[in-house]
Length: 140
Image (cartoon, rainbow, N blue to C red; front, side):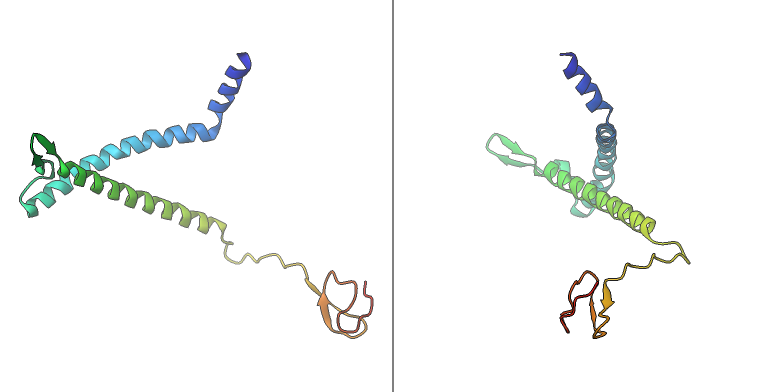
Protein backbone atom coordinates (compact mmCIF):
# COMPACT_ATOMS: atom_id res chain seq x y z
CA UNK A 1 0.00 0.00 0.00
CA UNK A 2 2.89 2.36 0.78
CA UNK A 3 4.34 1.72 -2.68
CA UNK A 4 1.03 2.65 -4.30
CA UNK A 5 0.79 5.89 -2.31
CA UNK A 6 4.42 6.70 -3.16
CA UNK A 7 3.83 6.10 -6.88
CA UNK A 8 0.67 8.23 -6.73
CA UNK A 9 2.59 11.11 -5.11
CA UNK A 10 5.25 10.86 -7.82
CA UNK A 11 2.58 10.83 -10.53
CA UNK A 12 0.78 13.87 -9.11
CA UNK A 13 4.02 15.82 -8.66
CA UNK A 14 4.93 15.46 -12.34
CA UNK A 15 4.85 18.72 -14.23
CA UNK A 16 2.65 17.40 -17.01
CA UNK A 17 -0.17 16.47 -14.59
CA UNK A 18 -0.05 19.89 -12.95
CA UNK A 19 0.01 21.58 -16.38
CA UNK A 20 -3.01 19.53 -17.43
CA UNK A 21 -4.91 20.50 -14.27
CA UNK A 22 -4.14 24.18 -14.80
CA UNK A 23 -5.21 23.88 -18.45
CA UNK A 24 -8.53 22.31 -17.50
CA UNK A 25 -9.25 25.01 -14.91
CA UNK A 26 -8.33 27.83 -17.29
CA UNK A 27 -10.38 26.16 -20.03
CA UNK A 28 -13.43 26.00 -17.77
CA UNK A 29 -13.05 29.68 -16.90
CA UNK A 30 -12.61 30.53 -20.56
CA UNK A 31 -15.76 28.56 -21.40
CA UNK A 32 -17.68 30.84 -19.03
CA UNK A 33 -16.39 33.87 -20.91
CA UNK A 34 -17.35 32.39 -24.28
CA UNK A 35 -20.79 31.39 -22.97
CA UNK A 36 -21.34 34.96 -21.82
CA UNK A 37 -20.11 36.35 -25.16
CA UNK A 38 -22.49 34.15 -27.10
CA UNK A 39 -25.45 34.38 -24.73
CA UNK A 40 -25.21 38.07 -23.86
CA UNK A 41 -23.81 39.63 -27.04
CA UNK A 42 -23.88 37.45 -30.17
CA UNK A 43 -27.27 35.75 -29.69
CA UNK A 44 -29.10 39.02 -28.97
CA UNK A 45 -27.47 40.64 -32.02
CA UNK A 46 -28.54 37.73 -34.22
CA UNK A 47 -31.92 37.80 -32.51
CA UNK A 48 -32.19 41.47 -33.40
CA UNK A 49 -31.93 40.55 -37.07
CA UNK A 50 -34.07 37.40 -36.75
CA UNK A 51 -36.52 39.24 -34.46
CA UNK A 52 -36.28 36.51 -31.79
CA UNK A 53 -33.94 35.20 -29.08
CA UNK A 54 -32.27 31.83 -29.61
CA UNK A 55 -33.36 30.55 -26.22
CA UNK A 56 -36.98 31.15 -27.26
CA UNK A 57 -36.63 28.84 -30.28
CA UNK A 58 -38.51 25.69 -29.27
CA UNK A 59 -40.41 23.04 -31.20
CA UNK A 60 -43.54 21.72 -29.55
CA UNK A 61 -44.23 18.12 -30.57
CA UNK A 62 -47.16 16.81 -28.61
CA UNK A 63 -46.26 17.32 -24.95
CA UNK A 64 -42.53 17.50 -25.62
CA UNK A 65 -40.49 20.70 -26.10
CA UNK A 66 -37.35 20.52 -28.22
CA UNK A 67 -35.14 23.54 -27.55
CA UNK A 68 -33.19 23.81 -30.78
CA UNK A 69 -32.26 27.42 -29.94
CA UNK A 70 -30.06 26.20 -27.08
CA UNK A 71 -28.44 23.78 -29.51
CA UNK A 72 -27.68 26.62 -31.94
CA UNK A 73 -26.13 28.56 -29.04
CA UNK A 74 -23.97 25.53 -28.16
CA UNK A 75 -22.78 25.30 -31.78
CA UNK A 76 -21.83 28.99 -31.76
CA UNK A 77 -19.98 28.46 -28.44
CA UNK A 78 -18.07 25.55 -29.95
CA UNK A 79 -17.11 27.48 -33.08
CA UNK A 80 -15.86 30.43 -31.07
CA UNK A 81 -13.85 28.16 -28.73
CA UNK A 82 -12.36 26.32 -31.73
CA UNK A 83 -11.45 29.61 -33.42
CA UNK A 84 -9.77 31.00 -30.30
CA UNK A 85 -7.84 27.77 -29.73
CA UNK A 86 -6.78 27.75 -33.38
CA UNK A 87 -5.47 31.31 -33.07
CA UNK A 88 -3.62 30.47 -29.83
CA UNK A 89 -1.98 27.38 -31.35
CA UNK A 90 -0.99 29.35 -34.47
CA UNK A 91 0.58 32.06 -32.28
CA UNK A 92 2.49 29.48 -30.20
CA UNK A 93 3.76 27.71 -33.32
CA UNK A 94 4.83 31.03 -34.84
CA UNK A 95 6.72 32.00 -31.68
CA UNK A 96 8.45 28.60 -31.60
CA UNK A 97 9.42 29.00 -35.25
CA UNK A 98 10.91 32.42 -34.51
CA UNK A 99 12.88 31.01 -31.60
CA UNK A 100 14.46 28.38 -33.84
CA UNK A 101 15.78 30.87 -36.40
CA UNK A 102 19.39 32.08 -36.31
CA UNK A 103 20.20 35.54 -35.10
CA UNK A 104 21.20 38.13 -37.67
CA UNK A 105 24.81 37.68 -38.79
CA UNK A 106 25.06 34.18 -37.27
CA UNK A 107 26.08 31.55 -39.79
CA UNK A 108 25.25 27.87 -39.80
CA UNK A 109 28.04 25.40 -39.11
CA UNK A 110 29.54 23.96 -42.30
CA UNK A 111 28.16 20.55 -43.21
CA UNK A 112 30.44 17.53 -43.13
CA UNK A 113 31.67 16.49 -46.59
CA UNK A 114 29.70 13.71 -48.27
CA UNK A 115 31.98 13.17 -51.29
CA UNK A 116 35.66 12.69 -52.04
CA UNK A 117 37.79 12.47 -55.16
CA UNK A 118 39.25 9.20 -56.38
CA UNK A 119 43.07 9.61 -56.36
CA UNK A 120 43.39 7.53 -59.55
CA UNK A 121 40.69 8.71 -61.96
CA UNK A 122 39.84 12.01 -60.19
CA UNK A 123 36.08 11.28 -60.28
CA UNK A 124 33.84 12.26 -57.37
CA UNK A 125 32.72 9.34 -55.21
CA UNK A 126 30.87 8.86 -51.92
CA UNK A 127 32.89 9.66 -48.79
CA UNK A 128 32.48 6.13 -47.38
CA UNK A 129 33.33 4.30 -50.64
CA UNK A 130 36.16 1.76 -50.47
CA UNK A 131 36.28 1.18 -54.23
CA UNK A 132 35.80 3.71 -57.02
CA UNK A 133 32.75 2.84 -59.15
CA UNK A 134 34.37 4.45 -62.21
CA UNK A 135 37.85 2.89 -62.32
CA UNK A 136 37.31 0.12 -59.71
CA UNK A 137 40.46 1.11 -57.83
CA UNK A 138 40.55 0.58 -54.09
CA UNK A 139 40.48 3.91 -52.22
CA UNK A 140 41.12 4.74 -48.58
